[in-house]
Amino acid sequence: MIKDIHLSTIVWAVFIILGVMLLLEGTNVTPGLFKPCGSVVTVLGFALLIFNQWVWSWHLLHPWFVDRPYLKGTWKGVLISSYVNPQTQQKVPPIEVYLVIRQTYSAIHLRLITKESASESLANNIPKGEDGVYSVASVYRNTPQLAHRGRSPIHHGAMLLRVEGDPVVSLSGEYWTDRQTHGEIQFIEKSAKLYFTFDAAATGKFTPVSAPAAAPAAPATPPASPAI
Image (tube, rainbow, N blue to C red; front, side, top):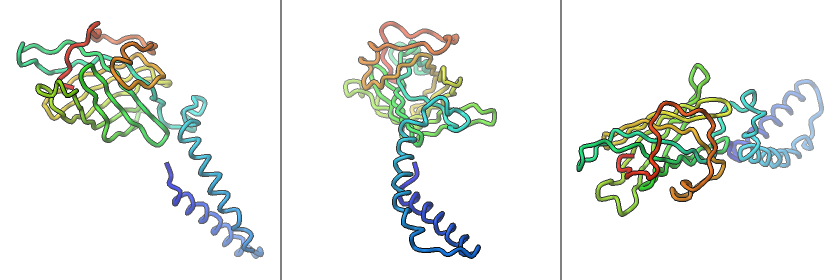
């Protein structure tokens, strides 16, 4: 979102340019021309704040005026990891995950929650491909609960999700970690509510927003998730 100092600079620049153009045309310019500058900055500041927080999300403004997908809410999905359990030498079953997205027009924050850990985004971007399809690119830090850090230490990773549909009907993609693990991830159910914990999300109400793709279903009791 534009800063106050930048907004003030733009408004004053417009008034100054207007004054110069009027002088060049032979119009008498008085100091009164610049009196509304302060009020204009205040009104525009409030207007931008309201737009940044709420108005931009109105679907009727997409995509002709707002060229950005609305992703805010909690997404329920399944994660399939390449992690191999060193004790069993078997891959872990599909893991139930929740992606909590907090979003304004100017910023987006992601938190991926599992039964044992949470991944918080450190840097995000929503690039648009040449074909008009958006993606969500995120670098994150995964913090397991203290009881599980013996076998699952804090680590970092990156995630790239494809944004499908307008309005958005699903998020799907891949992730990688600095523990040399990777996997696929898919979200096809959503709640407008922003959840803070796995247990709260697991008992929440989610609405399917697209037909499920061919992917293993999450187990009724989510397994340990050391590799996220």
